[in-house]
Length: 385
Image (cartoon, rainbow, N blue to C red):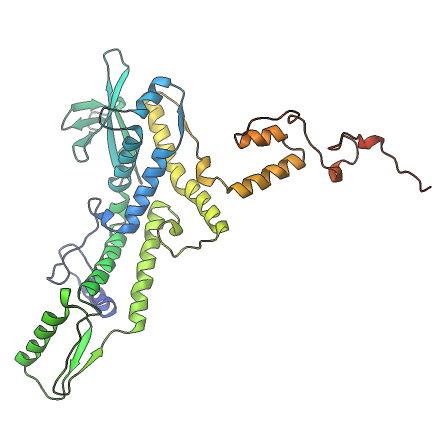
């Protein structure tokens, strides 16, 4: 560990009560924590972000220009539904940066099934001038036989794990959670000082410490402390330190938002809950996050299966029923849409006479008919009798 790391750890020890978790660091109090694709889901904001994206992508309505391929994505193999398949492959890509799906074809060229290959059993060979895949279970596979979903920065046809790129930020976040967990397990803030009026030798100080740990940590946390010999207890932490740790934890959630493009309010309660903000967040989530993954699937399906797929994302940004009625009413009264077109948008049956545009009286000047059928171009001012 270099000099800068030692200084940084000293600051963290003073501020948080724990040293930074870096590779190779170990102590009995704080075992090594280092974020990886395998353990990042233990940090709940990462779990939330990955599941949100994978679940939303899997439930997005889709339409293929090839009915056989559409059926294939409804039931890709005998073990998975289309929903489970899309969710699993997407989640794996979000964590590891790459996921691989075998396109199992019949002799005639038709696709029989899609098999999600186990992570870590596939490698990419580019030494021949044309990329091909080496599968532990299926041997050498041509590029057009594998759906290869990639995340992040692509290097030599391979995606990069978002967790791997941002491992330092996720490691810090997981360390903060470990610090909070340690505090809870110890029955409160462990930064306490026992003040004795007399000078104590090493054995006496150790005996007091051992006695406290035995009687007031773990399952014994919360038991009253009985002091003798005019001893007193001082708490070394301060409100500023506690507030600092809480602020750091919130900042770490923001880091996850930046990594995956998921709005902060989807990952925690720190975001605004007013509808306007949620509506904006839904559009931001679609534009800055989910749409990229939909396009990734769309491009790979077209490349490997020669099929165009379209995704219907209206459910992501669909307004409330009240707002929908208000917008349709405005459209009908302005003559932009007919009543039956408005009813069709709500999946209501058409009504007789509903295919004619309606123009409100206050908008029926200068020609045309009003909503009572009067031609306003023929109306003239009537002089007072």
